[in-house]
Image 1 (cartoon, rainbow, N blue to C red):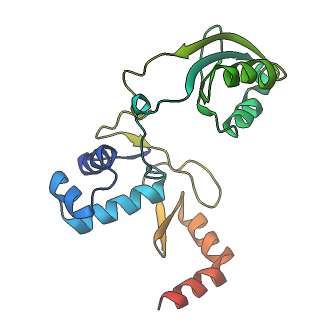
Image 2: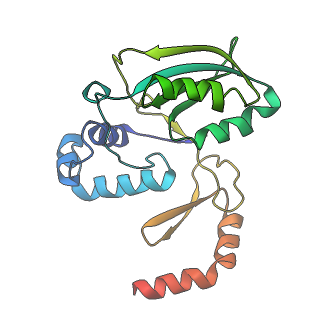
Image 3: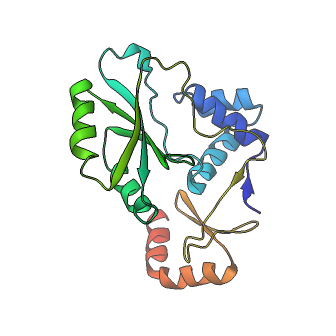
Length: 208
């Protein structure tokens, strides 16, 4: 079973999503918990990868320049993973989704103007191993939220920091400075300590 978010985790995440500048003390009042609890929970969720970063979310309606478009692509299955990685390196590509149906890859792009969009379609994508199924220019964004609906009980996948295997049940953990490493079993935990023993001892010594 994957790790799961509880009601406190959800309350903290929602408070940060509403306003990433909130202090731990303010979030503690909202979530009805102590400030140290908020601090430890946020650190834990960063360590787990649930929260990757806290960044400003721009309102597209307030930005006067730029053209957004949804592009549906058909990519040969053997090329799908590699092509998706190449798209991910492009700054103008804001979202990439593998989908079912006539197309199997949907991307949302944001470019400076219609000429830039045309160049993307006729130069960048035209020379790639894909078929452009459809292109839709976004005229207005009515709602834009996180790609995950945050709710209590939401399962979180964790991978072992040594072998990379998905962790089932509660992980074995190792606190290193401000970070927590997660392991699938005691064997991986011990192997990690043996592999990085000198670095761990040096880190602990520097903290003392």
